[in-house]
Length: 167
Image 1 (cartoon, rainbow, N blue to C red):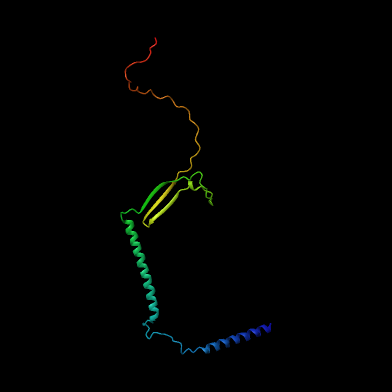
Image 2 (tube, rainbow, N blue to C red; image 1 turned 90 degrees about the horizontal axis):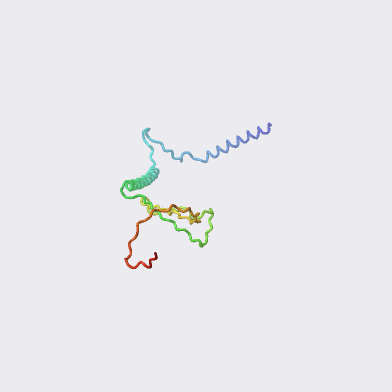
């Protein structure tokens, strides 16, 4: 126990001497300490001011470009031109003997809506292809309906020989 205490005291003394030696290597008279001459005087570092000014200028330029883009969007939205156009068309049914392309989802693409968007922002066209689907089997034949009304007689033919008359 006493041996451990002795080692700790020696280590503390060694660290104090080491830190004191390091402190003597630094000559504090050569270190520039900038202090204002008057209490109301501000310390100005020209290099730091140049860096700050360039950073502020970059941010202001970026902010100006964002404001211009927002103004252009506002003008486009508030103008009377058409912003969005919607078109639709029937999707072509695939041929019966066409080679079937395997899909990962297992969904037949002829039964899925295809939507495409084209054009520039604020002047876009949305095209929707509506699936027609496949022709299903014919249904059962229905019952015969009621007889309709008697129609008007047609035109009278030419007058003449009526054929044999049997009485």
